[in-house]
Image 1: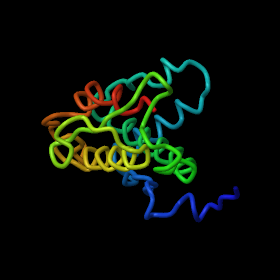
Image 2 (image 1 turned 30 degrees about the vertical axis):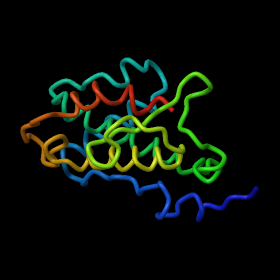
Image 3 (image 1 turned 90 degrees about the vertical axis):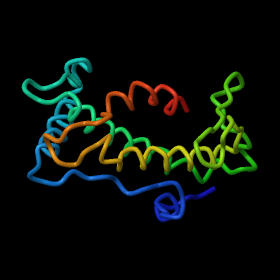
Image 4 (image 1 turned 60 degrees about the vertical axis):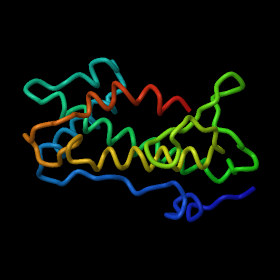
Length: 161
């Protein structure tokens, strides 16, 4: 089966364009520091360490958005091969089945085909990233909830696929 880049990056599918940081902002500078430290290839603990004098919430926010962009890109390359017929349930191998629950349509944990589950998951993450209460876009703004809370509660659950 042949797949083209046009098919992979179809906006009607799960793939979403990368979120970008505004040049000249402190978050853009943090993003550049993160990219430089991650491409150093030496000590991962040191690569993700909070730079001196930087806000932990801002640092985590930059990494959350970068992680979302990377996962989104990876998923965009495999989504054509996982259909509702070939992947009738979102699972993590034979021992783990993922069920979707939200405050809207799925009030109870519900087994879904993998593509539907992933679309709901990526939509949910995008809503969280765009929520100004969790990820304020201006530096120095107060984090009412903060990315640390979001990450500590949700990342282990959402990115187990």
